[in-house]
Length: 312
Image (cartoon, rainbow, N blue to C red; front, side, top):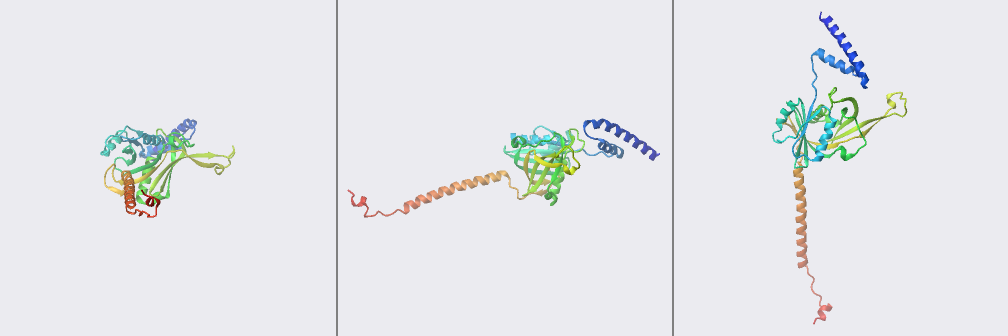
């Protein structure tokens, strides 16, 4: 009886898939594979975990940082944007906010001193958490590039070979793939892939770029796929991330990895101020020494000088 029942369910599933595919093909794509996967999930009793990202910022964020966050939200159709978060010291409260919106990922933009930007990425509720320092951020409005892509389309994630060298970089790669990668069948996503998100690891920094996939054919008739000319055109935004630390939990827990070579921007600014101050002091000391030398090294008066000979 069990085999007959399974065959009966399989026939119903196939009929249901054919019915849906006839209606969905009119929209410009074939959704038969998606329906088959959904029916397989229903028959197996396993529900796939849907990735959803909560994106929010802290108080004191600048307009440029806010525009960068908006560009990232536009690229992530599976994201949910929330209002600004006040408590910087108690970031673990963000887990409760994520549970209210049914999100299992958080991307938090923390602004300090109205000029420094940090990005927290975490998995809710058990972690891990990764903290980055953002440098050289340029939004789409700043760049004015010619690339363009469909809003809500799914990207191809391209990672450098440096992400497979060290264990903490493998963890960062997996976190990027789950947060930045748009899941298949997301509510606001489009069934098209027309841009590439590249993550390059060089000089202990992560370089982020967004490119459009452009396909050009030499003629109207294309004999094979090799005849198409595929190129990449940058869209934006672009920024550089410096890994600071990796925490085991969500906004807490023991430190798994810490970048000991990282220097905070406030320390860098204080070091630059001290260098300028030392230059000023050295210049003042040199001027004082020069005036003393002038007083000490005075030439004696020549007795044959006209002013001495014909002096009244």
